[in-house]
Amino acid sequence: MQVIVDASNVAHFGKKDGKPSLAKLQVAVEALEKLGYHPILIADASLRHEIDEKEEFNKLLDEEKVHQVPSGTNADHYILKLAEDEDAKILSNDAFREFYDEFRDINSRRIPYKFVDGKISIGSSAKPKKIKNILQKICNQTMSEFEKKGYDSYKLKKNKKLSGIAVAKEAIDRITKSKDEGIDSKLEGVFMKIPLFDKVMKMVEDAEMASDFIIFVLVSPRDYQEAVRNAGNIAVTVGDRLKLDHAPLVAVRNDLFTKPGTFELNIIYSDEILEESPFDVNITINDHDYSFVKKNSRNIASTVAARLGTWKFPIVSVKPSMLMEKPGHYDINLEKGGEK
Image (cartoon, rainbow, N blue to C red; front, side, top):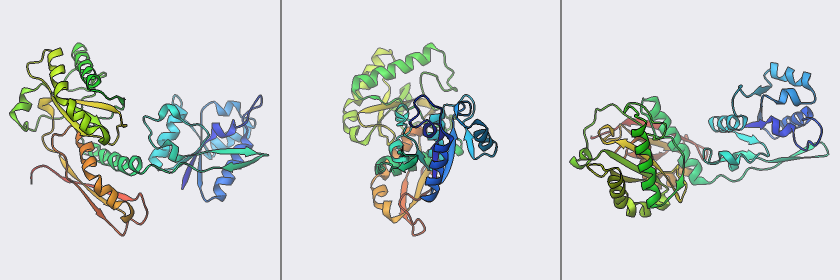
């Protein structure tokens, strides 16, 4: 397995008045290799100017044994994104707390460590939380497959605290600001995240055509019932405050990216919503995770529908395969959806 080494964090370990240490990096690399890991060293731009053995460190950079974060890039974010893309661990004592909303599995990726008498002691990462890992990874890959086929998806992750009045206020604020800014209906608003699609689908019902907006309220499966109870009041409140001819439709969706007790909104113009999900989702998975993913297939379907802005859920089929030997292994295939 690959391990992204937070080179600046390791080199600075225990530093008081001295300089960051190249020797600590070398010790960490040797220890990881002995454990069977493949270390990848990532350093921020300042380390080459601060480290004790500059000449040797620059040689490692030239030989690409150490990689420097691109200029103008946040090193912590770069490391976390690389680890996510490569499904790798991270050797670092940095908790990366400011990135918890974007990267939900930091604790299960991060490996802590300490130096004692020049030797490194490498700890263990936290056990992954099954729901956040396997279900969110499946949804992430599914959304990536949709994007490859040209379908935009909602990505904003504000996670505001859930309540009926908070949802109504957020919807009013976004719609008002988008109108005040004069945002073209074919552009993503800065204040209002609205995935827009070609007008090739008719509305599901006459009521939808009469409404200016569809407001998808994205909530954790735990909060679904509470959000449904507030949906009618939210629609009336938004319609009255904005003096709309017709109250917007409010559709509550389970969303596996949303934290319990919080919400997100995907607001779409009514005449630009997708009536049907353009593709159905076929998941081939290992025996270990099959039952769990099968049980949560409706939550996957709801998440995909909410993020794409589709009125109807895609069909999500889950089947086990002996070729998927290890827990966490799966494959996603999209099949043309819509009415059969």
